[in-house]
Image (cartoon, rainbow, N blue to C red; front, side, top):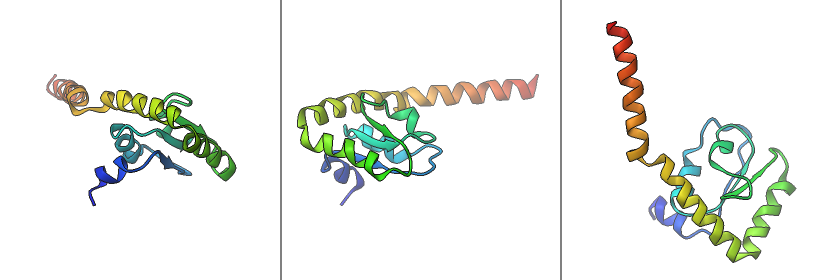
Length: 115
């Protein structure tokens, strides 16, 4: 089964990392329109807006992780609302948006090397 299909068949995504530089899995969940429950570490805080497209919880706290999962499982309307927000936020990371930013950085670095 393709990874995209797995995301599309889940109701929410959970990223319980202790440390996370930047989790691509969170972006995949966002692009699939799923709310994300994640620990408030590293890159998770860049893509999960607490009470917006998911929930951020303290690391190493299973109870804190469980509570928003239960909330989302019990409230389909909230799950759908947060999922729509995830899909909207995922557009920031679309290659059509990101590629020009990378190209500009590379062009600036190259111009400095020549000058």
